[in-house]
Image (tube, rainbow, N blue to C red):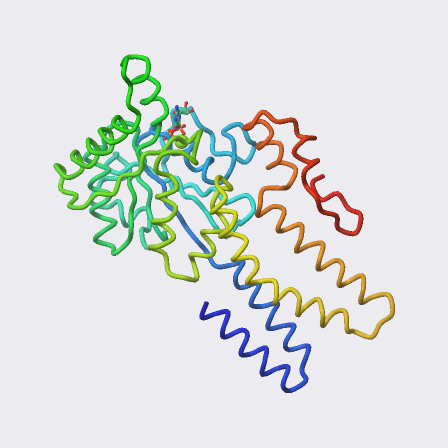
Amino acid sequence: MFLEYKAIEDINRALENNDTHAAASISQSYLTDLDSIPLKIAVTGVSGSGKSSFVNAFRGLHNSDERAASAGVVETTIKPKAFPHPTNPNVTFWDLPGIGTKQFPADHYHKLVKFEKFDFYIIVSSDRFRENDVKLAQRIVEMGKTFYFVRAKIDSNLHSEQKSQKNHDEEKTLQEIRENCIQGLKEQGVTTPQVFLVSNFELHLYDFPTLQETMERDLPSHKRDVLILALPNICSSNIKNKKEVLRSQIKFHALISAIVAAIPFPGLSITADLSILVSVITQYLFQFGLDKKSLEKLSSDTRKPLDDLKAVLKYSCSGKDLTK
Ligand SMILES: Nc1nc2c(ncn2[C@@H]2O[C@H](COP(=O)(O)OP(=O)(O)O)[C@@H](O)[C@H]2O)c(=O)[nH]1
Ligand SMILES: [Mg+2]
């Protein structure tokens, strides 16, 4: 917000001096700066807990996508590996090696993985949280950073419970798992643990929506918008929040477009203006998951034919089909 007010103030000053070029260039650098605010999310936990699947799901990718982190393979991460967000490359997920291994002894871990460069940490487990996960959480707190415990594979717990119990009560099972994790963490010395139950295959269910809200609340405001744009399009509130963030940027695009359109070269202005519009609209299609790859994923997730999904999209932009 502060950055936005400052940019508007500077633009007003430039316009008062009739310096439209300066106004356009302030707008442009404001938008460029927004795109380059980094958000670095560290994800860690033992091999097989669901880290890679979580990183993929958060980025809106199937495990089978070529941009996905490989899931289901036994791997020993030996150094932090970055996975950029497909549409917001300034957002990166870092698969961290587990703490307490030979290469990463607990006492030197924070130096080896350069703790300070991450905005927050997600510790993933698919059963109970291990002593080493807790050690890591304690180190993170010592560094003044935030962490969240994610208990993955909740769908498979519920599925087994459903099979084995006659009077299956989903809410009760979820509460039991949540309390069990919290209790286990308290026993290991975490005073107020926050645990989020998640299925990496159905992010809109269980505690992922609460996890998103908690992350948004905890981040400083200039990073909050970056997170909002990077969240998966799993519910209408995410889409609404993205809309608000993008809406607040429209005036800057519009100003650049208006100034470019005012350049007195016949033929050139309209082309330049259109190319700005097409590029902004294309960017929006990616943000809202309406590009070709995202639509294909949606079609496979919802088992609705791709052509049916495309048929309800009502937009045109200088005659181009932007979903191709
Ligand atoms: N049912 C279910 N399976 C999951 C979930 N997350 C991961 N898996 C499976 O668990 C296995 C290990 O997952 P992976 O993401 O590779 O874990 P990593 O080793 O921690 O990166 C894979 O076969 C995944 O398909 C989940 O939320 N639910
Ligand atoms: Mg992995």
